[in-house]
Image 1: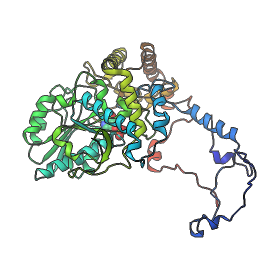
Image 2: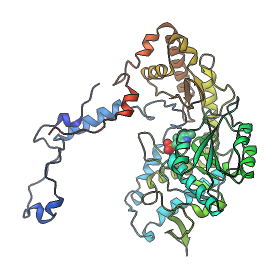
Image 3: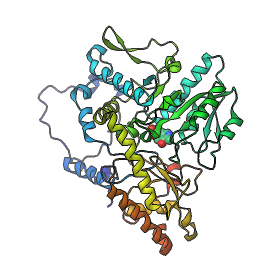
Image 4: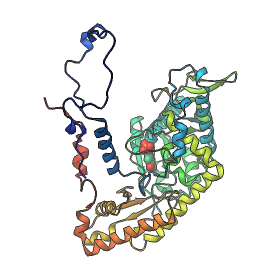
Length: 483
Ligand SMILES: *Cc1c(COP(=O)(O)O)cnc(C)c1O
């Protein structure tokens, strides 16, 4: 199961192409490109035949784990199946072959798709206006915090703090900091929800916003959100919703109806566009009317029945992405929404919640549930019961790979020790959920009877246990030629 680098297979003179002899006059390259711009050495490309190239990448692809291969219960990431019809739509020549510099008169269809997608997202969320520019959820958070800042500046005081619950995703405080605010952490209460008494202690006129994920990262719906919104608004603060968990709300709850002023969407989570491995993603931002003037430019506007991109929004925070965002992701999300329809999206939320609760019920007699209540689309279990055998959550996650599953998210949220955050999504069958629960229960037995087996897991994967800390501190991802 070892596969070296493609460079290791290189043999001088091997080629992956065949071209006829040149039948026009050869001119020295320096007569076309100035000497100063020409490379001095060859570019060190591997010399390899076409079938060797194909085999190399096919072998790598076979080692990879992905949602088309098996169950992927990575909590908070909504790794639902991505319908292939999305890909068909994204490959329509009219979408595939356009260029962002084309005059808008020649891309009316693409602009129309953007306007309609913005409209669907606004309808789904109860927001008044949407920008599609941000390239990911975290980028949407930053964009939103810039909008919050611009809004408060307009009111005469940018303010200082953004309040964030201790269950928040790490990107939340990071986005707050990048936007020039200071993040203040609010402790959750014993039910895993925003602690209203704690929140009150922090509320004052220096608070720019309250930033919360709903359902939160414990998979629990913030049932007192109306009260929270009222308190935050009473000091002039804005309510921001991290929309990563929108899958649980589709068709049931609209953030705009429960007090939120601004939110981001993760098209690559809720709306079934492929993700993992760094993108491309899309993290649109939706705002209420009072924040609309601050949205990034350009915005698609309609003029005399024609769509065009307009920069004429003097209060805008400006541009936050090259061109207009990741267009092919828009096409996939748009296709998904149109294929599902309003009823279909509602069923998504229902099935996501039912699947999570079913899976939770299959394992909770063995794996303790951190906040053991009816959950939304995901739940957080803990590997704490196995500590007495010297087994940690990391060992359990690694052992799951041997059973052919992707591991859940582990050690997040931070407020649950030895956390296993499990999100099955709506696209899995009952049998898959049961097979996964079986594996977890078998592993629990192994932890008791043969902990060493777990310490050394995984046993059946292309690479064994990695030194994660070393890998993140000393990444070595580039091949360098020998001189
Ligand atoms: C995924 C996620 C984010 C960040 O979104 P990206 O698209 O990965 O940048 C933020 N908050 C929560 C709760 C998430 O699950």
